[in-house]
Image (cartoon, rainbow, N blue to C red; front, side, top):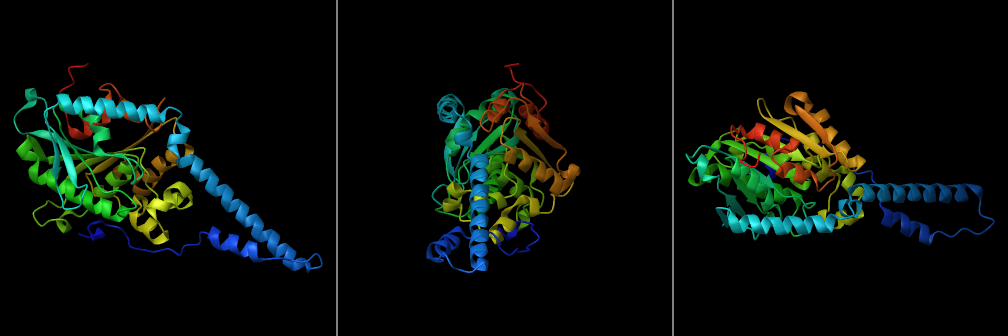
Length: 347
């Protein structure tokens, strides 16, 4: 399976990002005596100035994309997610760790819709976890399933292998296999394969946007060309270029200019009508995440991205609390994409 299943325009750009290791090595080896000519002193000053600006830019991007540092209680929130998710798995009608591919982490969990909605026509919600393609697990996101199964949806939460063991490109390909599995097996679990909606958070939002542009016939001849009905990207990263300047990520992601262009949804053609993507972000998130939310709207246009909103009072983590809340704005938008007719008994 290759990334050729995705419709991207294929152009490559020259990487003009300064290499700090080369610059540092050059500076350490240069030594000018006091009587050196002015042009050499000016050259050194210019090089030092550029290096300082580059370091400052990296510091800014690091602060903008380091959500765990930005949100003081992020560790406590993640712990609560894990606790709530374990409770959901213990109480829900679910099948865990079903295999959808040969790679180590290619498993998924299936949460059945409430029996009150039995009949085999449940819309299918595929939830793609975040973690910057290098952390977290499907088990951390089980808590999101409960309110949607309570309202009549079949929920599927896939895992995927993580960077640096695999590339982002391989992760995207793995998830085409997960969604293909959902289409082939939804009916076995009470779902309607013609009503598949993708929902991704953070890195998962990036992957949901990528999958929106997939040519499914290239994934499997038995698949319909337009397999996905719609998608919701929550706090998604739609342009990977800034991550080139985020040191704590680059060691694992190993991006370059070519892969940034190849894997950034902002460089993809918009998914064909009537398919749409809703883009949401917390109003308390960093400027960069809020900008990323706007970027996909600008790139694909209002037809393909009819909803592009900031959720008041939400940060990068509590956006998912809004999603889990039957009265939350993001939850209502997900219901809209799923075409759910009934409301939760919690309301």
